[in-house]
Amino acid sequence: MSNGEVTRVHHIGVTVEDAQQTIDDWTEMLDCKGKVVDIPENDLRIGVLEVAGVTFFFNEITDPDKKESSLQELEDVDLPFDFSGHTIINSKGEGISHIALETTDLDYHVNKAEQAGLEVQREEHKDSLEGKCNFIDPEDATLPLEFMQPVEGRENPLE
Image 1 (cartoon, one colour):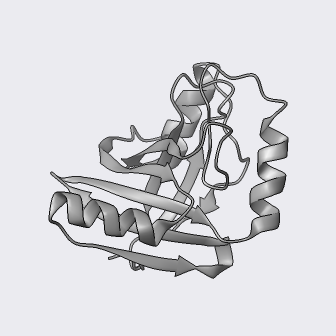
Image 2: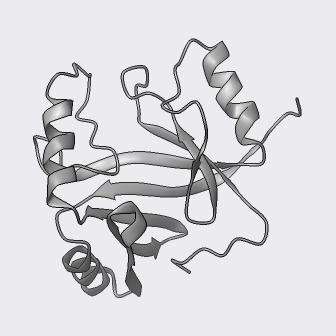
């Protein structure tokens, strides 16, 4: 196994009710550009905006049934924070759902997390916009983390 390297904070994921309204508000407030992209295969609408070198993903779930069922599942989880993940608005409303760290070797970082006693959410990595990703189980994390690794040749629809 190679030693992977975290190369940057890829994005800060923020769960929102309305990605377009959030982008409109932030672009007006910060005098910058942003855009909204629908990702129908994931039931997401994502607003993307870069501020001072930090990329924000404003994640709006577009399937009301998925949003409702995810919220009900969360009610049984006792966490030291309100984890919202990609798919729900948590009980206190909109907020930061996770921080995504870009890595040169996703397997390396997932294995390191497991060696540290943390569980990952998926046995198989999930396809993400321009690569693959996995999340640390929110019950184990003090801060919701995603590790993601770009896949060469795959375009990011948000760019």
